[in-house]
Length: 418
Image (tube, rainbow, N blue to C red):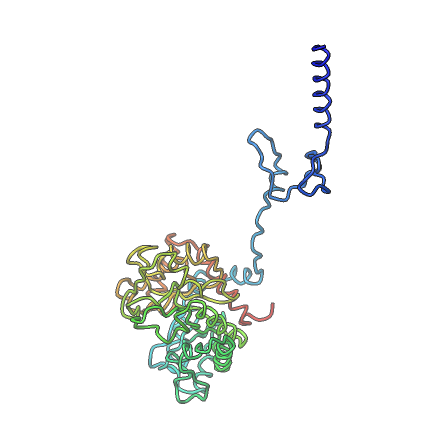
């Protein structure tokens, strides 16, 4: 009897186990049946590429398919053709924007002579060079006609306290109290109209490059040089307003230059007199000063100031001469692909510490494309030219900057039809 009962129990256990293995599993919703596992050929990955174990073999074609190569940026054939025809002297000259001396008010004097001796890339005009609408229009037209490669004809016309044209009583143009006043209502449309108004009259007088907008954030009330030249102490407001001004300038046919990277608004020194310093960390800059310099419009330029960043780069080197700031931060980390301009190399922060040749060489080594307003231009030109001839700077490095410069000039219609 016991054997019979034991046999029946074993049979019952066997039957129940068999049913359990064959019954379908159900989810919390009893009407939804959990699907059976599929084969690898039926599985569609949605969460990323399959991880390949070291023991698995992959062919070269499979590797290429899984990791597509980046497409190199398309070159401008027109610019390359111009570049190939240029001499080294012409290439080096394209990197310079120079000023007429204070008493020069016509192209028959110094500027044309400078271009004949050294083929420069552009001219910057200051208040003493500007007398009247007729005079400046004739000046710019004659300079442009006398240059083999069309020139950047540039000016500081921010609107407000820094305005070479608007502050001259001989000109009947709209004036602005300050960038801060324009930004008071927080309306980017007002800033865009400001940029378009300024760009329109600059274009009329022959200018094509404006060292504006000021993209600094006015965070330090003790700052001696920025103040109301900045749109705001709020980086997001400064960002919107600066980009709106740039848009207005571009609509008028004038290239904008965002300044003064990496931010002059939180310094206690005026770089016109000596080296300015910002003691902010990279994270602090990223959360404030660098915001208006991110995601800039195409065909914009950036001016790099003479501001040391001891917590990021060399402690006593101005950003304009620092590869860490110009190339590593602005060019590579922030992804800026346009033309990079130094602030004036005649300012105290530079001329008190470097010769003209040294400053020009260091700026190019740092990654700058345009060397603005050296205090003694022939010395700066000769210093850079000699550095290329001696192999300290490669001609390929010069070509990189000239290519960017010519592309910007082409975008302004200076190089003729494509």
